[in-house]
Length: 149
Picture 1: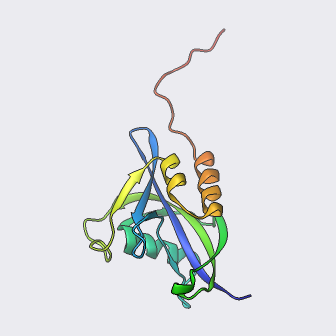
Picture 2 (picture 1 turned 90 degrees about the vertical axis):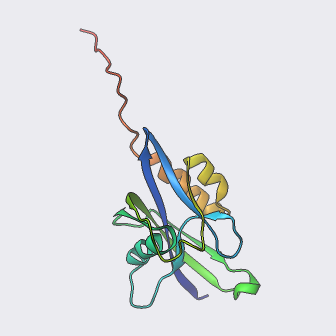
Picture 3 (picture 1 turned 180 degrees about the horizontal axis):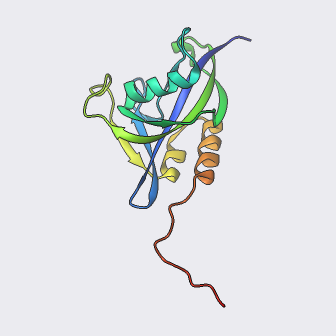
């Protein structure tokens, strides 16, 4: 079976001491999704993920050097019915642009990891999101603890 290569990115930030994930609306269904798209023949999956984050969500930042997960899915028959293999990367967002290519086509929102996990449809992507959010370092507490002498 032949798979079409796609890349997906999990854009995240630390905001007010908490992790947030950026979701955006799908062009076809209007549901909230992560930036994702077909890897162009002359491009590596990692660079494609970075490009999707910019084009679809208007964000830039530090992209993970390696994939954090991978999953397969089948497009619905009305969209070709072909099989896709998706490589997932993480992007620590450092910049949100005022203008980007698909800004008039999509709505975006920052949400908690729990809400992001509920919003994505693909079960394997949910598992990747859960694993990713569990491995992120938590912000350091401002409280100082005294050690016993």
